[in-house]
Length: 298
Image 1 (spheres, rainbow, N blue to C red):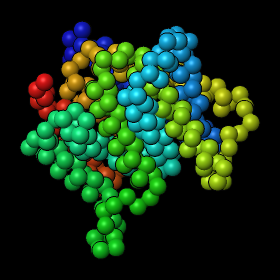
Image 2: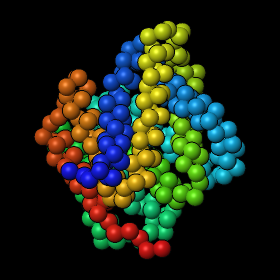
Image 3: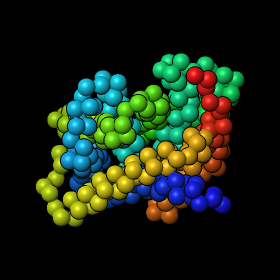
Image 4: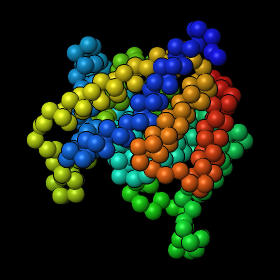
């Protein structure tokens, strides 16, 4: 058991992972009420943007004055839009596992943006993550030239793209630690609003997704509650990650895969197969190995 100074930060990270791991269920219910997950993303993050702006009005100007935070806006926006849409449209377990290929992309992004060398340790992580992806995506009917282990559906692609964006988000958070926490939080929530709103508007004009329905108490209250939960999860993440070593944070955050898998099976959002278990073990092993990586020299 963690000792007292460590227990609360660990519980805060578990709280964050639980909220994200089970968020697919309210997103699906809201879709059943006519609110597409992209519009839900806009609604829930708008509340957080409003609260932070009222609490720290100067934070908005801080984000606008620093273009590097705009990258965080884009990365967080794509992460949220892709993940939220993916877990509504596809098998929750499969999408979450493809999302957690994040250590694979983080190796290359850290090299590009943080100038961290690609070490043998990093190479093993890449190999494990790729092996997990191949197992998860292994095509039914066997391997053929026209049937490769490649994302075959929109939810698959959303999981992969969301994981890429999440890796960029995490690398940018490490790179931009000089900015106050509220500025980084606002940048991430602004991304959730602007990217999802832009994509939803374009797709609604094309007739691909519906426009938001007329406000009704049922979905408005749930969307507001979900917004407060996501704000709570961000506070919990910043509290826990700021008080624990990064390797401990990385391992604890993997409980999201557990929460997503159990809730999906329990509530009918997905099916766990031997193929997903095998691929998931490789992907989780890559993430655990990432948490054991030695800190780069500065």
